[in-house]
Image 1 (cartoon, rainbow over the protein chains, first blue to last red):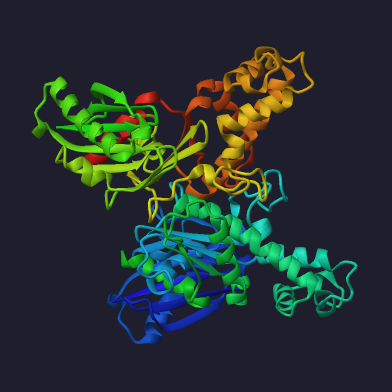
Image 2 (image 1 turned 120 degrees about the horizontal axis):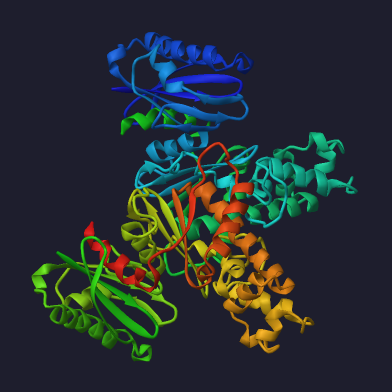
Length: 315
Length: 315
């Protein structure tokens, strides 16, 4: 039996045929062209599934279900997308429209949530009853797995780990709130802090690599500078590690998971990020009497969205 | 069938015989005398159960199980108390020692966790699939119910809602960390902030009621002053409401529960607390597109510990 997983992004729609064990056997994609609005996009998603099945040479009856990771909130019970900010979707009957093209059970969840589920189904969280997944990218996305199942809350609006508040009346967030964790622990925050810190430091690696242009600072520039021992880079990165670790400590005190997986752009820093975060957490967490959750780098990369979405159908 | 619930406190041990519906039919208690150490205390707990059954006139076979709410962490799977700070217990085989006196299944969880479960079983969280419970007392304790079951994490060290970090490098916490929520949202914080704010304000209600003595400030004094429109009381209480609401917003973004129940000493302020917290949350939360969780005052009072502990056996 196979499961189709769809990763609905702002630029591309990727669909993959996934085995029971979470392995992609075939992958196809098509541009999203998001300005078209939901209906033609969903039509393309349905047709992409049919094309996938055909190109993979399997029968429609060999596919149990279709899972979709959406860049926003979706109600898996009703089959409706609640909203996707980037796509400008609002109350879209995704499940119903999909089933008009491919008549299979349609599952849907937030994209970070399904990526977290992929780590549980086939990645570094495999075998863990309770795990958390973080995407350190434009924001901080999160996936929660409790007792082997996706947890996204009563109205599928939970699991927004990046919007845990870590600084009362702190930095203004895109959500309208203040002090959300993602304002300190996302790639966006690392970049903004790097751009700010390089000011007046033309000798710094960050300044040189960005040509002194705040708009040219990237997470990689800051991380590479920190790795090379550049004082500006190090200071910014150490502060970033601290902010990331402080949020993780809060999450451990709430969820006490077996594993916390770090994914998304900043996690490309690898051990240079993971090791100091783990150390900070060990030295500052509340409950030293019980085992510390493992803090691991995510292993699924870009395929996590497809695999996690597909695995929702495994039940 | 009946269930015994035990509320193990630093001063008293209370045990109650509880019906399937979460109603206490008989209650007995005995002093803890905590300096004795675990073994004689546990012996008293077991004998208290036997006395309860006898005085209630029921047969031992009418009792399905014994549940215990402990002021610390306990591993319900192994039957061991991990630690209780106040009692100075550390790795105590509570389940095994209890069964030597009363041979029934023994359940155990943190006291705030069982109080939260009581609200789910028979209080204001009844019927809610996912709910959170807060005790606003010396610290901020928490109970998490997910899918109708207690959630306390992999090592029973989760659900420590008071140790979510809401201020990076903020106030020093008793846990050794900094910026934990309970340093801003507990009765202790309300009292400390009241004592601080009344300095140099002998005209304030807070100062007058406490006779200018910082050690005589209570949560009730601050709340009453705020209710009466006293500027010092109002300022402190408004800051308290904000800190409480900010933590709740973070929890909503993580858990998206149906109900959040406010319990513990400060919740005695009633609507005067609940209404502004609800208002702040409504105005500042992230996801306005979905229903806001209900924020309610807990209804179980002092019996919550007994009832919640007992109801763990209902399965």
